[in-house]
Length: 593
Ligand SMILES: [Ca+2]
Image 1 (tube, rainbow, N blue to C red):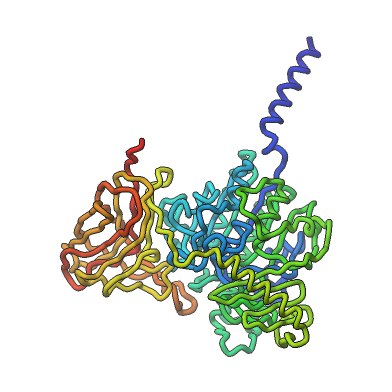
Image 2: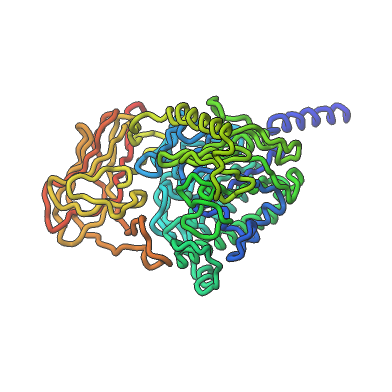
């Protein structure tokens, strides 16, 4: 009888293990921390004596650091390569704003892979690969999202943010808030017995240069060693380094939370940057900053910590890039990839786990604004066709093309082929309208960034990313958005606006095909611009922000399909009608249901 009972219990236990084995098999948590516009040189680890980053440095000391890891010269291309393991033009990414940052919907992401493997998945921070669902992170494998989807943001204190598609207000300084959310997510997933895949995309030290007093005070009067480059702006450097020390404190908090929860052995922590520094400041003497295809514009640290698996203090010498992260992390975690488009990247697991230090014969490409540069284990062929021996001359001072004609020829051929085959995948002109009307994600926000101003309407800043439309004064002025309505149905339109007292009574129309909303400005709402009071350095491209008010225009029937959404005035009171931050189209009913 007893024996029978034991056997029965054993069968039951075996069943539990079998059912839950993907979760109980101690699959490691994966936390990928990506900072924005932080240069390779912005870490004390890499020799910068102007700042201290002991927590970020500790990831390398307790794990591995890559000697030559390359990303793209600007934000969204690097992010797309991390997400797909493929060169960014293959995924339709060609710009950083007005839709060019979007990752094609037929690409599958690293988050899709981890989600399919039973992980809890989350992204916190700057997304910058498409705003409207299914381009939104919630459509790309991330169950949880908190941050902003745009390429930059105009205010870092208590900013307006997006939580799974809902408009919310952030709490405090943005990177502190994003880190709080990451820690809470890890804690919750661990309590639920689920491994986490978490992408913490911190948006600093990208401008605007805003940082809490505590960090600014460390740098405000500090005696910094400057580069000697006349273009180095001392105040900008002070603010950037202060922001980097804030990142470091947040990384420290995250590592402490991992330790406190005894998850160190079960958590892979990855740290890298999305491009070179956003201005000339100390960067190891390398040539080029953000936007450049030279070494200084594209070299990033890559730090990987996994105690017990990755040997502390190891240095990986072979060249590698953002395209390698997806193949590597699924390899380390034992997760199956999502999708079947060929990877351009390779798994770096063998270098991390100490199995090999072989340097594969490969060429990595850096591309931005029509310029392409190629890097192999020894040489960089720059965008002008000059060749540099990066081992003897890491700062690219001497063109050695004449001494190595075969290498010039080999790398030139590789660049020509990459441009033909990879850039060739980008269609001429962006044929992708902005997506609206998904039942599972009914609210589509169409910001000014994704619209086109006509007549006298202007953007509030040179850079569209967080701009609003202003100077709307005439009947012939309009704003348009090219959209694709997924489902016919009734839609509520919401206008995010500000309007001065004198404009009350102005009437306007929003139209898409036969669907028309007409409304009037019934209430003035004219708050001041925000953001300037927190800037440590005058901003250049980013718009200031305002607390826009949401006005419902009512519900009308809209047909499915592509079309132009147009906003224009019908009757004008006062000197100006309104400033417009965004139009929202919310699917209210779906006739299929
Ligand atoms: Ca960036």
